[in-house]
Image (cartoon, rainbow, N blue to C red; front, side, top):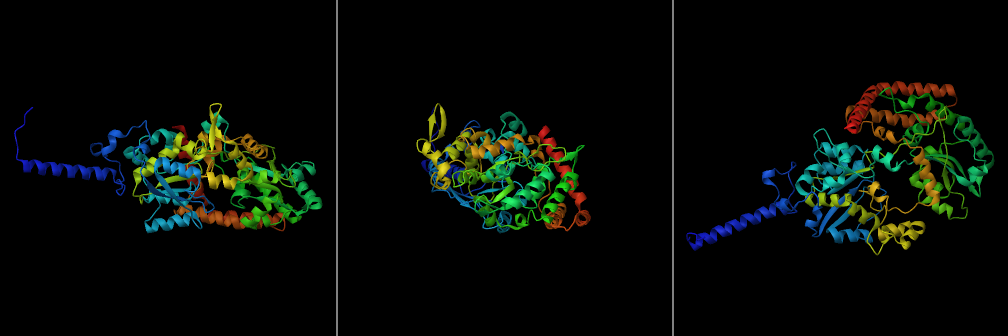
Length: 555
């Protein structure tokens, strides 16, 4: 079809203007220096690459150019780096994303709060789901809504993030700001038998069996075993021994953890229950007081530093422990391979209620362990959400957990599994396995156990015994009760903080009280202070939170 001729100069000018306009549009939609608005783009102003976005295909493949993303991991003990291990190099080569890991030197909450104040946050942030800073990040508009970024840059995110998880963390405004690792739904636990129960009551195997495997489930049996220990075994196989250890001291081991061992209910008749005042719990606290009065335990389990606990654990110098079995996965094989091969720890029935009910241990829950977010300080939100989508997918989980085919894993009978030399390192040198190869749980920030556990090597018997014991006593439906307490700096959260701090001071006083009358007086005084601090408001908060959680589970 013939067109009317136009002047050449006008043609050139229009062409030039059009090309500049197109270049500008292209730069704005794909430029890593520009961040999206808080709301997703309107359908009439969708990003230029919308035509290439496919909800059935991961969008990270659209751009694998080199890019750096900073990632804050809220655990001051996390010692791994990115870029040295084979796995991290492989993922960077594949996706183009190089990660610069950052960890706090002290408390993660304090560290990230300072960053919020400065307005300079890392691109990615992983924080404990219970940490007060998580809510501050969400409510202070410091992090992106993941659903909005997914709508705009990578709809495949919805396929891999899991609707259950997104719904669980959905806020009142309809947005979800974080994705958890190690998240378990009750339905999934019932279907798979994987409960993620971690709490156990442990004893040193050789010492316990030499003592005749005494009954530790009743106050009488517990005290008798401690007396026998004091009389005959306070020094065992050349080492001075400590009778007892409780992980997390007052706020965890001697409170919530002990409640679960005693199968104390979380609610009664639909109402949140005050577990601290339960008669079964009080009876066992008085048992510990009697043990202290008789010189059968001392206060070292309440005052030992982390270094002292580690030294005693590594040398099997505790007789019995209220201890998470996962913290013994490196220690038990080491003890079993040492000069006293039966000095490792086994799980047994510890303190029980007067009815002799089995423990009701916390399982995994929907909250998971750590929650990962994308900060609004990032200059590359599109690459950040695509990287999280990749890591959440089965492909990303496979790469993170198993590493690179032919170097760390191979296919045997149609199933991927770690190579023999990797399996040997698990038993002999886990540090080299993590630093040099970076497989298994080295980079756990986005770990989905439902996916990775299918590739996990069979656990050694000295570990599996503890895990099986915990799974058998897991109260699968009790995960909903985790984390009901108020966090942050609201009035009710401050009240709970004061109560908790006071309880940490009071419980050692109860255990060291001179007699039962003194115990009762100290406890009654605590309850009065607790009420004056605002305990009723705390209970109302817990009830409201529980009602919300039940509604979410019912959806």
